[in-house]
Image 1 (cartoon, rainbow, N blue to C red):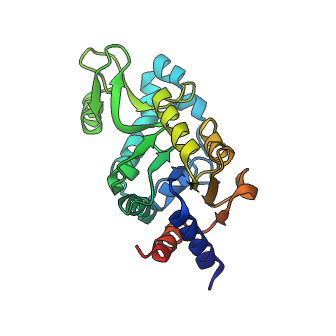
Image 2 (cartoon, rainbow, N blue to C red):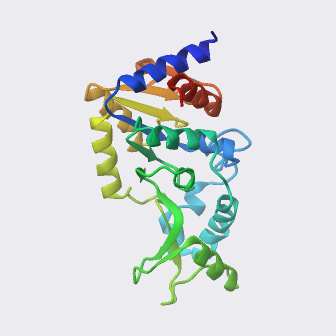
Length: 253
């Protein structure tokens, strides 16, 4: 038996034994869907762009045209991406009654598209945008149409003000309700699956420690080191689709 298969079998055993399993996912889970993560050399989203100059709330308020020049391309790159086997594996675990919820740092909607029902999007979602003046909300397809209709490519509300994607920008707080729900899930989890996350971006990176402090365990499935590798009950660092497929097979799913 390979080391990966052995670790997958060990993780399957932990999932079976746990009364509550929660997944925490980061950018790495969407890389197999063709979405770059943030800081990988040559391919990372922020490799050639300073996020403070294009994705900060102050930039949106001061220069919406510059903001949307960047975010319009981001929307276009994400709009037609499809879930990969890792997203689908988590949805399958939920359907089997073996996973309570997915907490994600991703804004790409792929967990929802894969069928995950209990989803906590702590960084928001590109699924809709809102007007910060009157509060009106528009779905993504409408936002794209409004963007295309404007010469400056800034989608605007019926009231005339620029729309803002319902994602957490630099300089903004994470949504309180989502973080409270995530912390509640983390505290009640017997096992947290940390998938595709560097576990370095706070406050979300504290969630595995919440699980550990409450007496639960963590399993880490991600490429690259994390600060919590030494505390993981299971550590896998290969292809996450293959690894989660192996876990499902060990569970008989």
